[in-house]
Each structure stands twice: as C-alpha cells, then as structure tokens.
Amino acid sequence: MTIQEAQRTVDQWIKTIGVRYYSELTNTALLMEEVGEVARLMARIYGEQSFKKPEEVAEAPAQLADEMADVLFLMLCLANQTGIDLTEALQKNLDKKTQRDAARHAANEKLR
Image 1 (cartoon, rainbow, N blue to C red):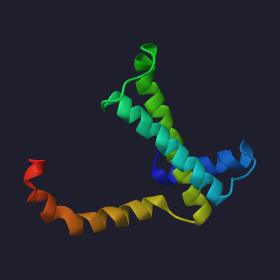
Image 2 (cartoon, helix red, strand yellow):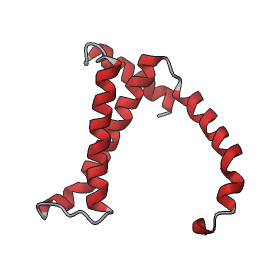
Image 3 (cartoon, one colour):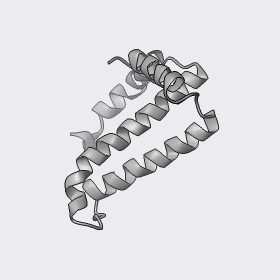
C-alpha cells in the first residue's frame, strides 16, 4: 500500500465506519497519547524499563506494531483533514534532509 493509498483507505474508513473525523485538535491529542504508548513500549523492550508482568514480554512486539499503526492512522487522519499529501510532503522532507545533512552525517565520527 502506498502512502497515497493509505490516505484514501483511511478516509474511506472514516466516512463509512467511523462516521466522521474527530476534530483536528482531538486527533492531535489522540496522536500524542498513542506516541506515548509507543514510547512506553520502546522503553521496556529496548531500554532499561521493565515490564510489570513477565507475560507482557511475549506480547510486546505485537503491541508495539499495533501502537505504531495507531500513530500512523492518526497521522493519516490529520493529513487528510488538513489537505496534506503525505507522499509529496515526505519527498520534500527527504530532499531537504539530503541537501542539509549529507555532508554532516558523512563527517560524523559517531555514525561510523
């Protein structure tokens, strides 16, 4: 699925199953909540934080994937609501990073 197809799929889902988009502000708040859930899992899977129950360890990779999908879903909603073509926006962002950062990253000893 391309980014453009994902935007269309989410839009169709919202209009048929979700009834309507939540407001941009509500979706932004929900996005922050979901990013926090990703951060919590990352701290436990890859960081020093531990899970409260041992059985949570086995469920963590599937949970992380689901939380990342929630973040993506909300980003697609916000892009649709604000009229942003994420394919175009991502390409422009990559072009900017390429021009700005190519020499800097190549010269960074920490990245070798």
